[in-house]
Amino acid sequence: MAARLRLRHLWFLVPFWALALRAGLPIRDNSFLWHVQAGIDQLATGEVMRTDPYSFTALGEPWRTQSWLIELAYGRLEGWFPDLVWVPWFVFLVGAATLSLVLVAVVSQSGPAIGGAAVLITLGWVAQPYMHPRPVLLSFVLLAVVGLLTAMRRPSLWVIPGLLWLWAAVHGSFVVGAAFLVLDAVRRRSGRQALAVGAGLVAASFTAHGFGVWEILYRFAANREALDFIVEWQPPNFASAWLAGFLVALAILMVGLVYGRLAPDALWIVLPATFFALVSTRGVLPGLLIMAPWLAKAAQALPDPREAPVRRLVVWLTVGALAGSALAVLGRPVRFLEDLFPSAQVRAALSDAPLFNTDGPGGALIYLERGARPVFIDDRVELYGPDFFTRYDLAVDGRDWRGLFDEFDLDQALVPADSRLLSGLVEAGWEECVADDFFVVMAVRCPVS
Image 1 (spheres, rainbow, N blue to C red):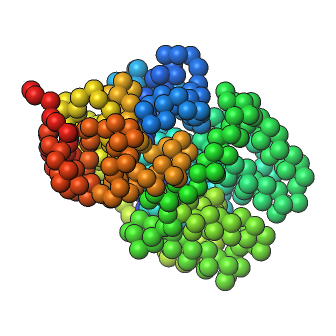
Image 2 (image 1 turned 135 degrees about the horizontal axis):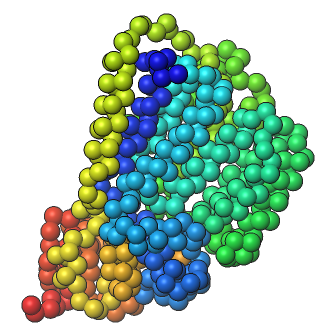
Image 3 (image 1 turned 60 degrees about the vertical axis):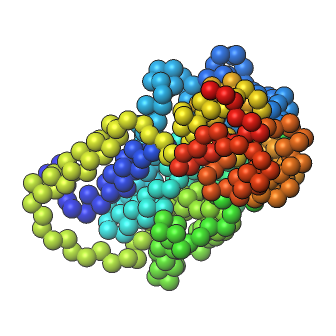
């Protein structure tokens, strides 16, 4: 088998190599960090969270952490490998599991052809900006499983209840997977598959939160307006170098439809997946994962030029170069993007008084301060709601900040160096205590060192 390794097979390795390089980049996802702290705290208390422990603006308010199972894993990994040294390997292994499932689906539909490699490379291309260690990363693996099930002639229905139970304990997007499995049941006219999905939704009600899992989804839906303040929930910008890969996928689909590689019933899956991807930036990769096997069928219509002879030595040197560069990146120390995570110097300048912070460093402060410093806000939109986010947004923009500051008796603030709020605080007589290239600590009166 090894002797028959050819150049076209190497194209299937390219997304895995790119994933390894991406996994070694600095951590830039602030919300992931509060998930790590939540895992540490839940392991310590022996129960899942049902109220907010991390902010002083919503402290004690009813709030369930929907990703409790993966948070426990985060907490355990942090105990075994402190200071987040496990993160690059976690991102790589989970991302590789996702790509491997897609690879199985692609090869089952198109074989080891250039068209199949084009689909996997396109998906790996679009996946790059989504490869953060937050819980949604696990949902990509599970979405790939759903895509594989929809492509099977006879899917293993017994898998579905356990899949949805696990998914409900990891991320709220389990309802998306269930919806596509129902669409596939309609496509197949399979009542047994629909019953299996129903059993899975019942099973989802028996995770650690019980029926509270539906309360989480309800609160999320009720706070949809707050998502307008989060970039990833806004419509995708396909002028982006990464998201433009989705347009390549659409082109492959169109070619497959024109040349009859896709049966009409495939539209039961392909059209909703496309719509899902077009609604928000967050939905682009999930939409592609669902339609990946169908893309592979469509890719059979792509030309497969005769491969030029390649010496075996060149092939294995290429494999070695890909693996070596990937391992070198994954072996580097964990780093943070400084414009998202306050430095130790900046944090040392903060007093014990209530602190105004923007949502960017909120999750980082929860982790870096080990939950000891309540934050003003972070990215948990379902907790704070659209009204609070609107007031917060006006304050960050330098308008109407006084009312919010007076309400919570704030006399210190951690703000980005380019924030409009900064000039408003200076005009009001606040003092600059510490500043670096990215953050400024402001106070009514700076503490005397």
